[in-house]
Image (cartoon, rainbow, N blue to C red; front, side, top):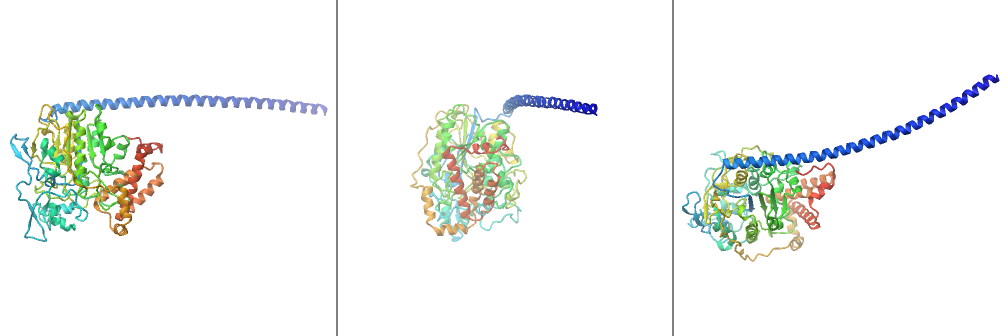
Length: 622
């Protein structure tokens, strides 16, 4: 028994030590394996991170090199194309500037300027097609026996009591084709053929003006010394027409896209969160800014206030992040830089008080809106010209000053037909009247300015706003956007001098003294706050057509202040916007948006810092 007991004890003792030894070995093997795995993982992570960093660096420089190579190739191709398709104009022009103002017809601004000079096509003496004959009139339906002649002078600003002259699609239809005109016309099934510019007074009376004959009043040269001086000093185009017979927004779209995407009237309300609301207005072939970007040609938009119309275009939020939008107050400083790079510059004015805090819409801006003091826009024109004239780029620049549409004011020249853009309607909500875009709108002022333009040029060439992208495209060797700009005349033929002039004025006359005093936002707010009847009227009125576009821009600009990661806040803003039904709600939204944007500007925190910080999923700017 003792032998078996001893064997068992010995076996237990041996087994115990064997197990302890095995456990110790296994434990140390596991610990060693753990440290080996950690070391391998750390090494692998370091190698992978290093490899990724190196690859990202290589990829970045490959992309940069590829982009630069493509850009250089495009420069070479454009240079060859320009030499092959050389025109008589564009000597040494590297920069194109466009200043587009608001709502004035040619006759209203220059009809009594008595502009005379030389026809660039024939070299013969010629006069502008203006009102000097003194026989152009309309008839007031309230007094059919009275012929109301176009006369001078005009009021520096239209009062709200006189009413903002109507200029929507149906208003322009009446102004061009007379009272009772219909669209589609029962004879042509399109725009009426019998255009005689006879319905300006009747349309203004229909808008509720107590003195509709004022629509025939035109400025005297002494009232517009700046614009008149430029028209005499350079080239005035007396057949530049708005792109369609209608309001601001679609006409401005033609200046950027040679199309309005089918929009034939002011923007409609945004009662639902459509792609146009969030992403902006799209065009099948993009815009001139997209063309320039794809061709590696720098461009810039100078904004006169927080709500530039161009911001309503799709993609402009990303372009803003990339630095393509600049406050106009920096215009003189930027173009004074000898290395200023942008080849195309579009200048937007300050559109004035589109706020709930003032009875006087669009006042205190410089867009020359009919409700605002015309001389403030004269100051803007003077500032733009003199800044460019004093810059290092004057001898390589072309400046076009024009107006988006006629603003309801009389003009005696019958607008001709047009080539339809040919692109599809980009949003069904754009199509208000089923317009085919084969008719140009009312004539507007246009002055082409460059040291290569002969003094006293009177140009009778037919243009419309698609002549702007057409000029840029042909100057820089870009393809046309639509059939409209492909057929449009450019202004390069007006650059007839081989050498730049040395006699162009360094300064322009001072604007006239209108006696207009601008009401500050604070003062206007107190006026409206103390006027409950006005607020009650606004609360019961639908959103006015001219405000809808600016309301949309204010939404898009304000959306940019909310981080993309904060989807709940962005949705709340969108829901509030789509719930707007009244004029008061619209004005309060615009006012709040402007206040937020101004506070950000004063704080020195640009919108791009907001969007770039908040979310790793934020797309990089183009």
